[in-house]
Length: 362
Image (cartoon, rainbow, N blue to C red):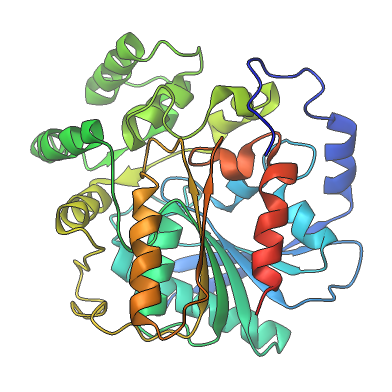
């Protein structure tokens, strides 16, 4: 793998090539009503050629949207998979920032959103199976759905950052222990990194001012609030040297609200050492005997300051011990963190070929 550059290369992204790739694809928006009635959607991305492979669904994390897979880089993961012949679908589930803020839990998404999305893809394509690339809380909730037996026709799952066993840095433990309860007591029921690009008052303004004092690593206030919200690094979700300037500016519009209900659940899960259902949407004992035949390929950035690589190491050991198959794979990406796996300017060379190989494997 290429060594990390000490400075961002000026030639790292070619805007002409990025525009050309975008011009060769079209989006079909497919409204989806989850099994509990929540309005979600799928984006069916069509390239210039008819797919020669089956459908693959890309699932975003918390406080973002499916667009997170389409940063302004030379070749996005969407572009790469289209070029590789896949029928690409993006899922916007209930955590999508394009939807009205609401409280949600991972087991609600697992029970209601992801199964309905997969069913819709199968209905519209006539395919026998779906493969998936899942990230962060899209990954935890999708993996929970698979383990609970709710995704029987998903055959391969490529998971980034965290799946069933969240492990976080010590400073993140401290923030969860003290900050979540304080926010609830102050009637602040969500955090929102987009406070960094808008006029805010009250508690959001105080949080923004405090973050600005502590985080001096860049001048992008959204980037700094992302680090406060999700991790322990400076920054937390990427290495600045892996992002081109266009992406670092673009991400101002790609982060939004995330409810305290999520932080409550992830706190319980971290303390338990495994993903805990909290809304009675998934059986509490779903991990005792996982009901999935899918093969998992687990990715973990060695420099992830949101969820430590140990998260995927533990899930890999669990899957090999409990699913009846030993071909689950684990890949530690030495130079990468959390989201630069998808947004990094070198990811098309360093990471996407690995994802494509894992998707294609039986």
